[in-house]
Each structure stands twice: as C-alpha cells, then as structure tokens.
Image (cartoon, rainbow, N blue to C red):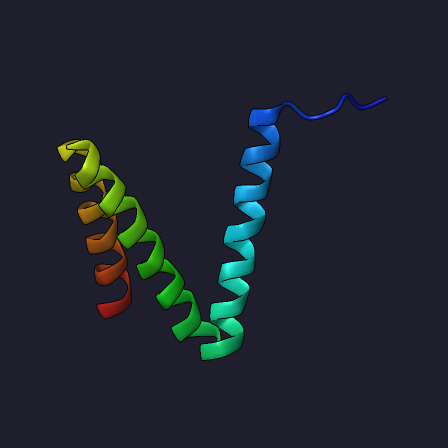
Length: 76
C-alpha cells in the first residue's frame, strides 16, 4: 500500500511536472537543440535571479561555473 504524499512532496512533484512541461513546450516550439538551450537559459535566469535576491554569491558562482562548463562542452 502506498501512503498519500505529503504537502512538500506534492509541491516538489508539481514543480518537476511543470518544468518538464516547459521543456517539452520549448522543444516543440524551437526544435530539439534550440529548445533544450532555451530551457537551460530559462532555468539559469530563474535560479540566478533567486540567488541574487537572496544575496547568495556561492550560488551565483556555481551557476556561472555550470554555464561555463556547458559553453566549453559545446564549443570544443
């Protein structure tokens, strides 16, 4: 028997579903590569804005590091 999900678990599940729907919409609208790139940029922008509002330089550094890693992977 499975237990009902907690409120926090439901919120996390809905968040994942929303993000996956967003990703699918970007891919459907712009194609596989460009859609995935636009989705990545949207995530970076969202998380960066939240980190900036929190005043969290470590999170901003991590985002910059991750973005640089994506850049290096696709340019070499």
